[in-house]
Each structure stands twice: as C-alpha cells, then as structure tokens.
Image 1: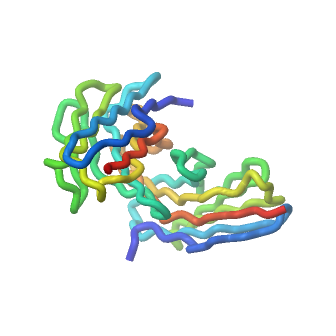
Image 2: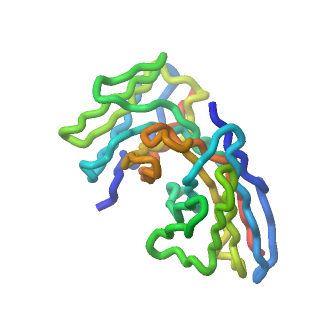
Length: 111
Length: 117
C-alpha cells in the first residue's frame, strides 16, 4: 500500500462546477499536510496547508481528519485556470521531515 | 515567499557523459535539501536527502554512485548524474525547507528536464 493515496482521476468538469479530491495517508505519525498544484512540465507549487480545523482560501477548502487519516480538497466555482494536477503531500515533521507525495489527481475544467 | 533556484532548466547530453544540477536557496538557509525525480505522468519520487556537511541519505533503489550529491553550504546542493543513459531522462526537482521550520511547506526549484540521447 502506498503511503499517500489519492483519487486516481482524471476529473473532467465544466466551468462553475464543484469538485472534491480525496487523499488518505498510512503513517499515523505524519505531522503536516499540504495540497500542491503542478502544471504540466512545471514544478509543484503550494496551494494550501491543511489543518484539523479546516481552512478556506477563496474557492478552495481543505479538511484534515486525523482519526481517519484523510485529507480533502474542495474547489468551488471551477475556473479554466484550475486545470492542473493536484498533489496531496504529507510531511513527517521535524527539521528534516521528508515529504511524501501522492500520485496526483488531474483536473481539467472545460468551457 | 522563499525562493529556490535550480539550474539548468533543461539539458540534453550524450549517453555516457555526466550532468551537474545545482539547487540554491536564495533567501534562506537550508540544512537539508531534497532531490526528487518525476517521470511522465507519475508523481515525484524522493531520490535522496541532502545534508549540509555530511553524506546524503539515499532512498531504496537509488544508486549513490550514480547520483552524486554534494551539499557544501547552507544554500547550495548539487546533484551529478554520472555516466547518464537514456533511462535517466527525467524531470529532476530539488526542494528545501528553511532550517528550523520543520513543519512548514517546502519550496521547490524550477526543475531540470534532462534528456539523454
């Protein structure tokens, strides 16, 4: 079993749709969690951190359930520019904590 | 936000030659940097953890003699792909996390697209 597992996708949605991505992690000692966005042939860029209390940034909402070891990302009112691969990232913490990436979920928003 | 600069952005080399990739943290110090490799339509796979002033820690299955890592200062780590072959063609990305900021995001370099012909 992979340490971080994501919805396989791909997701093809119309503009304006709401889409949700799920992610589970197996290491209960994981300490910090992130969603990154990666555009084709580019480096990953941080989209948002994920907290147990949930956090929202505009159209994006992230949730963490430590008991279920589950992370989610909700995108409302999808835009064409949201088309990208979304990576769930789990960090074991500590100064040199390694990040483990999920395989990513590809989203294509169509007009 | 913090900036990590990776150079070169792309390189084409002949089979059997060596290629050096640099990763610099421009506005913070990083005791530890990470090197990843990404094949098409696959996720980033950690190759090794680069530690300033000491030997790198390699992930299982990554040949340390083929992928030489040097972390000579708190702002620079280099990855040298020795005797490159076509199967080494990939997207190599480094990341760094500011020293003392264990739980925060990692900042990524722009990546280096290596093509071995």
